[in-house]
Image (cartoon, rainbow, N blue to C red; front, side):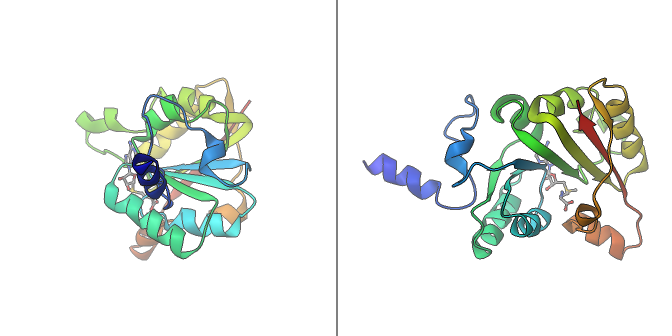
Length: 204
Ligand SMILES: C[S@@+](CC[C@H](N)C(=O)[O-])C[C@H]1O[C@@H](n2cnc3c(N)ncnc32)[C@H](O)[C@@H]1O
């Protein structure tokens, strides 16, 4: 009994404490209503996701972030805004897509300003690499869309290259209502006069 109430307490915030890293999420237990799902990978301080979830109560949102301090910000902001359609998961993004998210469950993936790893010897650490479109395809529903933004021209070219090389994806538009909403890092880049780049791909 004690263990159950501890578990309930752990799940009372907006951060979803994974009961196991070997079993896929049961989306019905994460949200009060089953609605179209959107996932942001590397959500940072969650300022984009909290505002987006507030504007779209008819959708559910998961923010994936590996840093504890940042996922705690999602928790605080989500609770303050009274959002029931937002949850955070603290885990590595590729692992989340490969092993935790039920296949073909997301209508949208958001990837905004993933770490650029500009040094040649670190390029292998980039999230959006040759293997990533397979993970995105597995995560997305048919017709689902992935939206990407970066300030790094070389990473932008790599994003285009890996998705163009994948038969399941074709270029898509970013709706104005989405592109108008900036992320925390984007606001910072804009303030410093640094141009940002964006693209989108839709799966078959
Ligand atoms: C440059 S920040 C951008 C944050 C946010 N998307 C924005 O635009 O404000 C990148 C974020 O992704 C997180 N991150 C980087 N690699 C990750 C990974 N493989 N899995 C999960 N989170 C990751 C970092 O901790 C950081 O919060």
